[in-house]
Image (tube, rainbow, N blue to C red; front, side):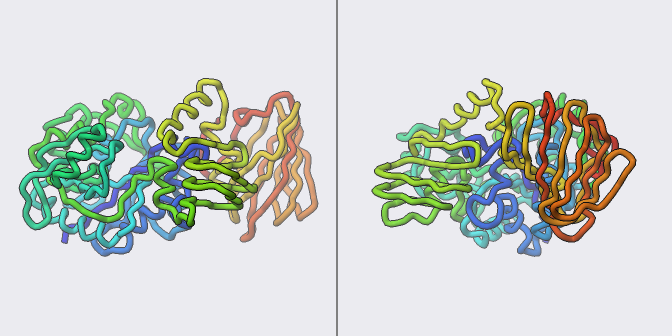
Amino acid sequence: MTKIVPVILSGGSGTRLWPLSRSSYPKQLLDLTSERTMLQETVARVTESEIFTPPVVISNDAHRFTIASQMADFGVAMAAHILEPVGRNTAPAAVVAALAAEQLFPGCQILILPADHFIEKPGAFVEAVKLGATAAAQGGLITFGIVPTHADTGFGYIRVGPGEGGVHEVAEFVEKPNLETAEEYVASGDYYWNAGIFLFSAETLLEEANRHCPEILAACRASYASARQDLDFLRLDSESFEQCPSDSIDFAIMEKTDRAKSVPVSMGWNDVGSWRALWELGAQDANANVTLGDVIAIDSADSYIRAQDSLVATLGIKGLVVIQTPDAILVADKAKVSEIKSIVAHLEENGRGEHAFHQKVHRPWGYYESLDVGLKHQVKHIYVKPGASLSLQLHNRRAEHWVVVEGKALVTVGDETREMQENESVYIPIGSRHRLENSTGSPLHLIEVQTGDYLGEDDIVRFEDIYGRKEE
């Protein structure tokens, strides 16, 4: 059987799941439906069968190290990790994936997968892919239609025509309908939800891109040809990729081709597009509540209540979503959660950071979290992974004081490097070159106290960095 290259698209921002999902750490990187993250769950579905090659992941620059870390933690080596300089929707991503996959695995098929979907029955998913692979080998462009469980106005639909062996001709793609129309679709038995999962040979996709969106193909070819390797990442050329039109694979190719086919499948699919979706997927108690974390729900019903790091108590509520994070609390009518993006827009328009960053900010070497911010001072908890190192850097407007609370640190200040034990501290004056390293096999935890007239993260000048990051 022709090898299938899973192409995992991991570029979304997940604004509808704010405040847990934020642009710097979106929903595909979170453990929302199991102990694994959404990305890891997606990878698991395509690593437990011999028909798949190692995956190709396409993401933006900001998430690259977190994705690499999660894949390494999961024990999966990527065939390639491609970085888009700007978002251009799914059609350019699929074309770039086809170019890369054809080079890595000549004659292969590619399976386009969003990184943030839930599939309850992975076995049914794999069997559907096998069905689709036979049709893809004959030149078809396959989309997987989800057997609808109810009339839903939040999805696009696929109307299918005659079929054979579980594969149907695609009669048309239709946009999100109103409720009455959706009910008619479901009753007819000819319509399926469009899950945004596609399968085709790399060669076929490139042929159809040349027919229907040649400007996208040209831009992607130029960007891929000029891509450069950066550590374990492949960076597409910015200038040519920015010239690429932005379009979905549905509009650019699938709705125009005469080679579209569909495999209907019932696999417990959910796009996890809102807090309501997580309520539907969660384990509901006798009052139809889903609770996670330290929650006390008294005389409360039909609600999704999630506490991240403190007690959340509810009394006499019904039909609400309550989400607690260290720096934000969301209380929303469950029927209105699709409008949460308006909150995110408000935060962004007013120059606030809660739309983008959590209190805990992940870095390739570990993370930091802000504990206290005041006039001319900030206190942070810093965690450095075993074997990791921060860049050799300086700050022009702040001094820092480090206290080791767990582990051993190798600290450079100016021309001096020394080892620091627990309960030892060091002072880094303004303008001094410094570096923090964890050369041991154990975690390193510090408390950092910053003082100065400006404490922004952009006050950093890097001289050396093992992760290849530019000066911020």
